[in-house]
Amino acid sequence: MLFQNRKVKLVSLLFICVALLLSACGSSSEPKTTDTGEKTKTNSESSTDIKMNPAGELPITDEKVTLQVLMLGEPLVENFATNAFTKWLEEQTNVKIEWEIVPKNAAIEKLNVTLAGGDYPDVIMGFPINTVQQSLYGKDGVFLALNDLIEEYGVETKKMFENSPNVKGLITAPDGNIYALPQVNECYHCMMSSRMWINQDWLEALKLDMPTTTEEYYEVLKAFKEKDPNGNKIADEIPLAGYTEQGNVSFASFIMSSFVKRGNEDLIIDNGEIKASFVQPGWKEGTLYMKRLYDEGLIASESFTQDRNSLKRMASSGEQNIVGSFPQNWIAEVVDVNTEKGMAYAHTVPPLKGPGGVQSTPYNPFSMKQGQFVITDKAKYPEIAFRLADFMYSEEASIRSNVGVFETDWEAAAPGDKGIDGREGVWKKVAKPGGVQPVQNNRWVNTGPSYRSKDFRFGEVELNANGGEQILYNETSTKYEPYRLDVDEVVPPMFFTQEQSEELANLLTTISDYKNQFLARAITGDIDVEKEWDNYLLTLESMKLERFLQIHQEAYESYIKNK
Image (cartoon, rainbow, N blue to C red; front, top):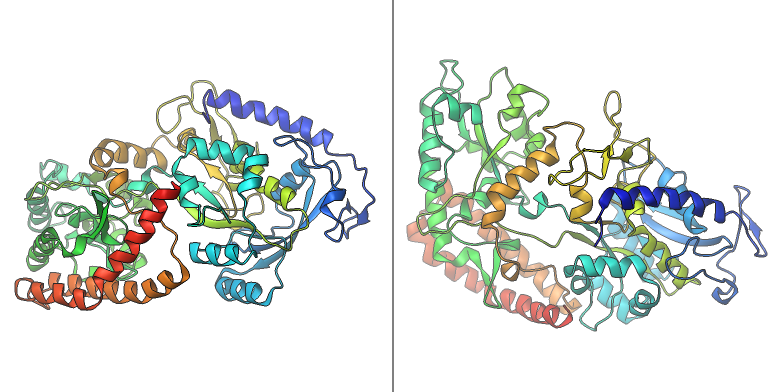
């Protein structure tokens, strides 16, 4: 298994790489000289002219080969061509990359025009090529099927499939082919990201216990409002504040899970059948509970209009805290955790038990970006292109791609260092004076294929004993993990046909917008939940909710067959 004897394995890799660098210097090809003085094979030559070393051995070829790559840009990367990870990757593999970088704000248009016009390179990398595009261009032969390449050369890819069994099914199209490789990042706390942070200092000041039920949470919020927990003798406390994001009321995600089980897009799998959580009786009860909080002034009215930056200003301004609790994956996105004032929020409210006995944590175990690496039918060296991607799934390539240069950005853990999960540590970031500069040229910053398993992430030794990953791990493992949904209850990311996708696009927008608007209006009292609930259900029915669920069901059954 990856990261067994974690530190020994990673340190060994570093010594191996030195030897590989020395062995990659020779060249026996009839070369072309590049503008940098390097001698390289070009794509005008046949792939049969290139002799590869055995699968899993580096360099991939003894003579340098060039691949043309269309790459999605990343604002935090100064220059992909001169990037330290790019240079290291080229040295290890003997593959020279010729880049065409596309800014993020032009990504969709550029990808569509490039594919439609037929003027595309060997490899398209870093774009979130969706499952519809994968199926469509895979069927047309524009994207090569990778199954045989994986079987013959996929040393690291097959390791990833073995250690993360969900991945293969998620990237397999309905026809049984794999047309694109993903980026896998098993972020433990991200899998259960619906959490509520609370001001522990206020709980202690009022001698209150951490709430465990919806009724106890109501009593805590009421005390925050009425009993001056910040001690300034001013009624300035805001018990609960949130924000809106993509039409959703942020705090509703956490609270609603105490009334009805819910997952991605507020859907759930019940004994193999996909159902909508937002038409269940529990959804109505959760809405009424939140209306009660709002009616009593326990929820900031700004929560329905402000964005996350506005919430940050609300929670961070002033010398004293005025917000009692707020929803967010990580508190540092709202308050400054380097201050005592900000660290007052370093505790989460556990999933609350609702009046009907529901106590659940939304769960998304499918931690990956689809479509990060495709090989096109223009590639003269598809085997070499695939082996480049396969190598990027290795442990050292993944850490260099996402963290940076060894001994400059990260180093091996010292004896006795503990990782995030309490086991022996493997690696740690190098402390830098003044903090890390946002724009850099040592790593790719979450772009392209890489594999960060749970073990990899848990192997990090945080420089700060109260660092973010450690807090998130502790809060998630002790409070949220025990109540998370079962994997079989979670709707996975799935492949849809072009026809299904086009139909879903309209249905999803209509249904989601109406659901979110009804919830916000019901909480704020703009409509009467009791009087309007039946009409709400009828309206969703008229918006073809049944067809929406049917399309998901068909795709889910196809996913199960390929799993």
